[in-house]
Length: 76
Image (cartoon, rainbow, N blue to C red):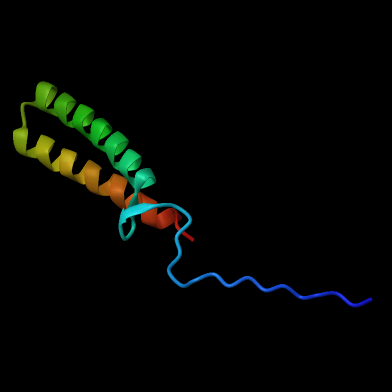
């Protein structure tokens, strides 16, 4: 039997999802939003119960950074 061979050419740099800038799209926005809300809640609890503002600020900033960096550990 004689079968035709078809080829598919995918351009370099094609992304499966739209991105606002390289590496940041809708999925990352939701991830950062949820991570920031959780970090705010934890920082508020620390501030209310410990009255330690610097520790609450560091907790908040660490939580936001952790929510951003978590995505890059799951990318193949």
